[in-house]
Image (tube, rainbow, N blue to C red; front, top):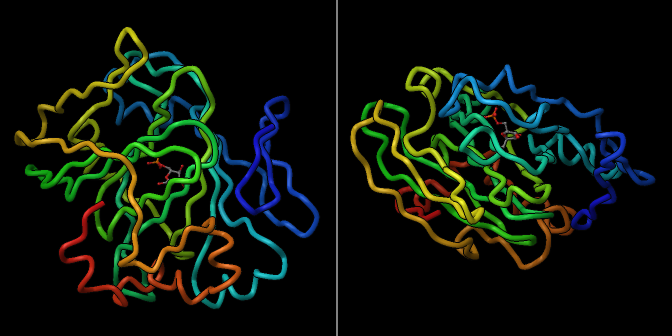
Length: 258
Ligand SMILES: O=P(O)(O)OC[C@H]1O[C@](O)(CO)[C@@H](O)[C@@H]1O
């Protein structure tokens, strides 16, 4: 069982499900199978943990249901097993958020790591030139923000332990995979080295690019406090409104650093 950050839910390894505390709602997990994500892996024939990850979208405390809906916000939690996908760590496929009907923006996403070590990888575009490419390492309690319109994936950086994270996103979410799949993945593939560390290989189906790597940082310009993202929502729901209404920070996004 793993503990959550101020939302009473935990992953049960034996049942491969999330368990919800009193007054916490959430669905059964959707298990993403290995066959469903092969098109974006370095070795599409590889073997690895199956399911590759388990997702619950729309979790929260009963008392917040209305507020989440009114604000077009949604919390999800994702659990990744230990292991590897061939030479790669366990990871998601990579996608861009669809344009939201209510905002006209491809929404940003706010991640918070709960257990394990994650790398959030993001690139500006899935066209020939991927633009800026960044890999941000995040530990329990760290937050990472992927700005509007960027393609991204989430990686379990430690092949020896499970990784669990929460994300706050637009309730009108949808994932666009075309660009990523057409190029056989994102512009950089994470590779597990002999010592369990991560190195990167560029994807030759993109024009050459540089990869910047750094650790997670604070985001005062987005009004993120030190408390967990769910508690921040509970205490001041308007302070996360930018997730579903990115235009509130239109000027911030222009020079945003992950
Ligand atoms: O569809 P993909 O790219 O495999 O990623 C799915 C993941 O993306 C997320 O939105 C996080 O970016 C999670 O909900 C989910 O784990």
